[in-house]
Length: 379
Image 1 (cartoon, rainbow, N blue to C red):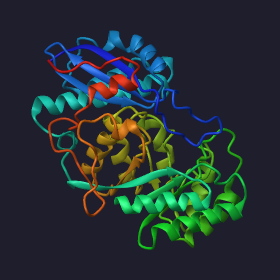
Image 2 (image 1 turned 60 degrees about the horizontal axis):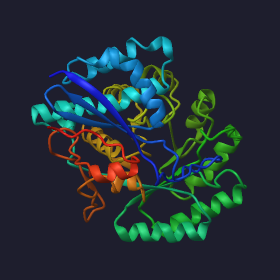
Image 3 (image 1 turned 180 degrees about the horizontal axis):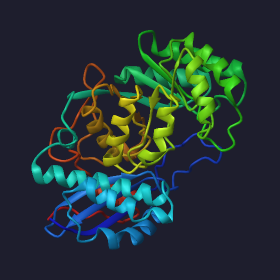
C-alpha cells in the first residue's frame, strides 16, 4: 500500500483564545488537519498545531521523500522524513508537519490491520481515561462560575492556565486558585499552568518556588510551565525543592530535545504535544524514555479532535498515564466529529476501540471551518 498524496486543511472561524499577550483571534489558523491518501484509496487523518500555510510549505519539501512510500510503516517513514530534512532545521515547521503525517499513517495502519492504534502502540493498559477540563484563568468569580458548570457537566479534573496568573501580583494569583478549589471541591484534581512559554516571561526561580508553596496549600496536583521554556537549570532546582510536582515540555520537539531534561531530573511530569513533536512514533519513544528516567507523561493537548484521539490511544498504551487534556468549548474538538465526545458517569472518556484512531470526521463541518477546503475520503 503506497502513499499517493498528502493534503492539509486549516481551521478558521472558531479558534479559541490561547491566553497569549498577542491574543489569538477566531480567524487565526493555528490548527491544521492532515490526510494521507494511498494509491488503493485508503485515507488516514492527523493534526498539526501549526498554520496551514506553514504545513503546505513543509509538504512541498516532504513530498519527494514521502510519495510512493509504504503507508503502513509509520515509524520508518516518519524517521526517514526527520533524517533527510535535518539540515533545514529540526523541531520547527517540518517537524510539526511530520507530526500530522505520522498520526495519519498510524490511522492507516490500524485500518488495514483492523486494530486500534493503542493496540498497535504496544497494547491497551486501560479502556478509558480521565480528561481534565483545560481552560484559561479569569477573574475569580467568573472562573468559579465556569468551573461549577463544568463540574455539573461531569468533569472531575481541571487545569487552569495563562490569563492574569503571574501578571498582576501574588494576591490575585492566590485568589484565583482559592476560588477554583472552592468551586470544584476537595478530592478533585486541580492543576495550575503559569504559561511560562509566553513571550518575555518575567519570572525566575524565586517567584516559582514561592508560588509552588502557595499551590501546595490548595492541594494542586502539578505546577505547569512556571519558568521560561529554556531554563533547564531553574526547572531542575525548582523540581528539587517544590512540594508540588513540576510539569512542562510542551514546546520541545523530537526525542533528542527531551533527553537532557530527563537526565537533569528537571520534570516530574513531561507534556509533549503529539501534534508538534513528530507524531505518535516520536511521542511513544519520548514516553518510554521518560518512564525509564522516573518521569511521568501526560500529553499536552490544546488542539483538535484528531489530536485528542491520538492522546487517548497513547494514554491507553502507557502504564501510568491517567489523564488527557481536553480543551473545553472548542468546536475543533467537539464540532468536527460525527459522534460527540461523551463523559461517562465517572467523568471518563472511552479509548476508541475501532480500527485506526477510531474517529469519524464530519467532513461538512471540516469544510465549513476550512473555508471550503475538503479532506479526501476513502474510496
